[in-house]
Image 1 (spheres, rainbow over the protein chains, first blue to last red):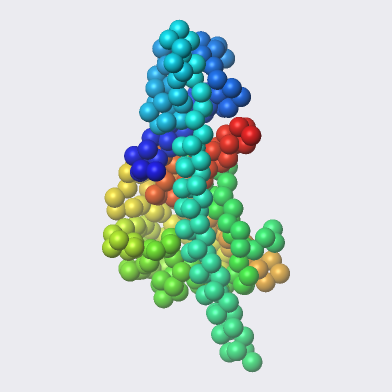
Image 2: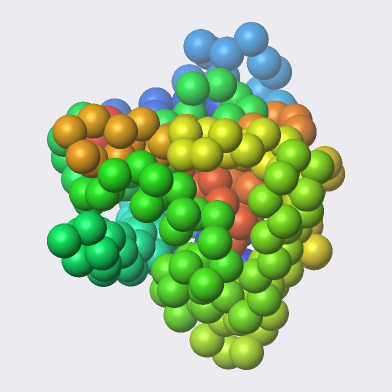
Length: 114
Length: 160
């Protein structure tokens, strides 16, 4: 996954309305009208959010010219969680090196005492 | 809190990120490992990143500077000032990266709590603003990826 697409995914997820849209789409596809209903927002405002989500590859639109239903695309989400898990692993490695160092310091201290 | 070895991350407020980790050592040793350059150089840094510069003037008002070198030879600098130094229990410092993509310095508080010869380190990163923290989340090469991670985990759960 390219850095640009990851950036787009994280940027898309940084907004509460867009996360709510994704959560709604997780339970099945919906039209813009249906998506706008629970929000105190105009359809154009919801469409703007949908464009951001589409650019990030998180949402796709159906062919049906009238309804153009939106559906959730899970693949970029999976890529982003994999990337984050990998990132967490980066830091965990640093702490594991510290575990090794502390074991050594403890041994040194105990041998000085005895 | 006996789960030694698991890095936990929480976001208690919209400007903070908190990392917690238990170490199997008394806290004066953990505090040393966090504050002495010759020790810091042996562990500090994400995978493939090593400290090539580590300057620590460990007193209130004293400055610190780290330069980390990545696997491709890229250098990344960060520095700040110590605000509180209470050996071996508490360390408060400011932090700013050389090429920081968000405004304002962050305030980092490390608390070292010893229990039964193990030490829990709680590191709280307080960003200057919610915007700053959200940029960190958006560009996870900085630090605070985990709130996104939590959100993603929620989303993925709701999908299953």
